[in-house]
Length: 622
Image (cartoon, rainbow, N blue to C red; front, side, top):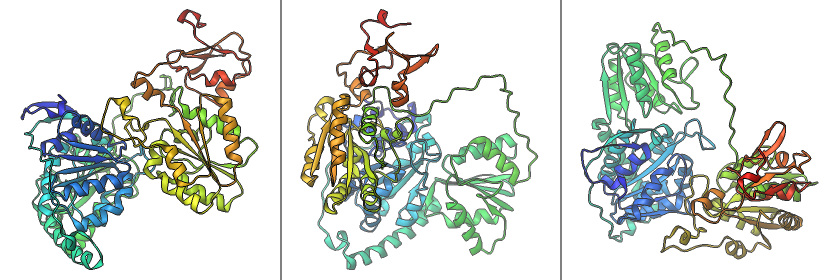
């Protein structure tokens, strides 16, 4: 049995933040869940996927976040408790549905999890999604710990059903990927079947209906504001003339700093967990009893601006600061030392940071830049495209996935990126206003997510570019989740279809289509050259299973290779491929047999044919 299905209330278990959130949903009786995978939220979906295999929970990896929210909206409007999970930029994709769903509302609880990523551990921006709550008029809650993340999910479902609105559940990477002790609660019965009641004059927002629904949304907002005032997740601790208002993981840093600085009798803390609508009366009361207030919130000055406005309404002139010179930054994550030092500076405390140990005699830790895996087929494709495009002036629009790492030398095959699917759309623009050859890269999962409309646009408007679809048979970057093109039989899972990328491309009307196997280097280069010469839209589908995914599926493994004595040290292998299986020892090129996957790409480009398969461990030169 999956550990998150353990029905033993009161038991204490150690869970990852994302596991705790999934457990909270199980305790709340979630019966329907949808997602498009994206770090830092991916483990929530993985647990739902696993739980769905041994329970009556319905879970799906949807084509993209907009579709995930649409199927969730239908389930919730049929009275079924539903959760929709995505990372912060995924909510941009789902926003079209979200803004009007706020008007339409729900019947069963719908919790929309948005996982923000301060410091951009795995993202292209660090946008602050609290603004989506303000934009949509929907309530938002934010946990400060792993335990609270679990407990807050049932609260969010209850809140959703009380207001008959979706509730935004905002986390950050530090909550998603921390581990903490969680006390299990009772599991509510799942109600997996619902009933949709036809009510078009409330559920079909043509203008006349939408005007009425907007009035209802604002009434719900007023109700939510009253609930925020009384919420157990908005609370004050401590005593004293100074005030700190904080949210999320910052609350933990603040609590530790107050203890470390020994100012428990000087500072009151207002922790905001039900963060939209903000509890105005609670905040005003807090300000009335404070000489000065410090705002501690990662990201944008979202609460700071609102708190200053509330102070103005009350005619209060106390100092309220958060972001600014000598205080907190709008950039990146906070940390305990930073929060402690800023609190001391703002309140004029004598504070000397702990002396850092002298590490001048310690060798510097070697840098380990991100890189494509050993044997990654994307590396071969990038090499082949660059060889085929020699002599051309090129622009390489790229996309979101493992292959974004193609930007690094020596591959250097990424010039422009905005968001998922943008490689295809931007290619059309580049092709119309420059005289350069435009060669775009997109992964298979990203193609299904948002690459298809751009390709249709290119065919219709007669753009001229080559799109390389890197089909490695899985959603690799976020942990090998399925997408519509995955063969689910390989995972021993029935009941799924499979959509052919080649069939889609042909149906769109792309006039030149090439399928290559990137481990066959010379054949691939020749086919790519032909595609690059085509005037119009051409598509190259580069098919090879992700090497890590293949290992997980226990597919047959190839023999590793080694560098033989024939090597003349041209270093073509390192200088053009830079596979991490290569290393140098005593100024000679070597291959680590434990990393080598046997793709043989390096052997095919070696000018001396010096790279050979390993016959046995003894045959590998030391």
